[in-house]
Length: 100
Image 1 (tube, helix red, strand yellow):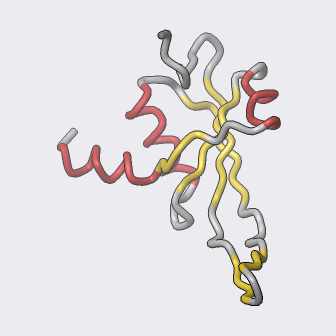
Image 2 (cartoon, one colour; image 1 turned 90 degrees about the vertical axis):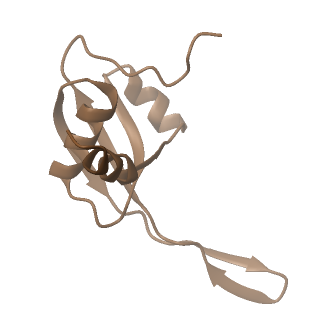
Image 3 (spheres, helix red, strand yellow; image 1 turned 180 degrees about the vertical axis):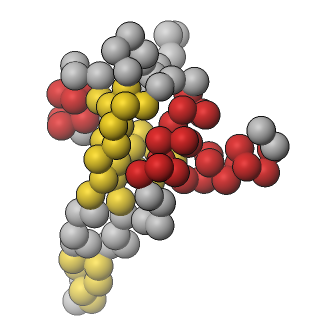
């Protein structure tokens, strides 16, 4: 795979999300990621498989609503984003925290 294509796949996955729900999902071999809003499920699966060398069996995506934030008297909104729950094949795993 060319380096340009690999870079494009790396841009789809912004970061893993470490939340209460995300840590509960780890027990079911599911991982939670923040992805670019324009990415579809096929692109997300390809990016995860290429970056982490695992087999993806299922991808669920959702767009949480943008929240309003107040700074003093000014009211604004946080930028919206897209989340993806990625289910891996049995036996595969992603190391989110390397051994220290």
